[in-house]
Length: 71
Image 1: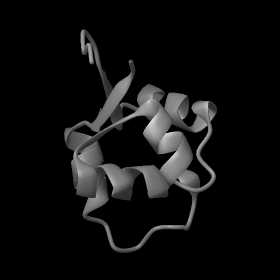
Image 2 (image 1 turned 180 degrees about the horizontal axis):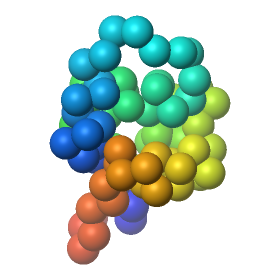
Image 3 (image 1 turned 180 degrees about the vertical axis):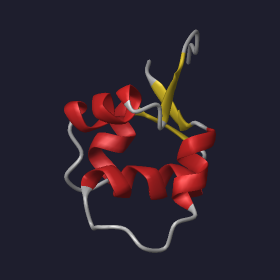
Image 4 (image 1 turned 90 degrees about the vertical axis):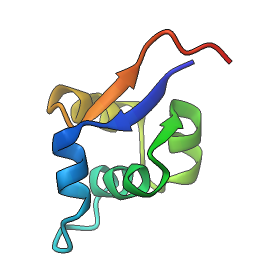
């Protein structure tokens, strides 16, 4: 199971009030409120999010994938 959370950079960005209405920003603000979420939850609850959006945020070091999480 893939669990995502914001990095320190991501938490700093989550406090920004001026940003475009894009899937990337929706993920940042969602995780800023929820602290962590599974990949499936992000894909279903946040509008416009695709696996490539999550990958781009990981590459930019805004998201961190938690490893070793078994549910």
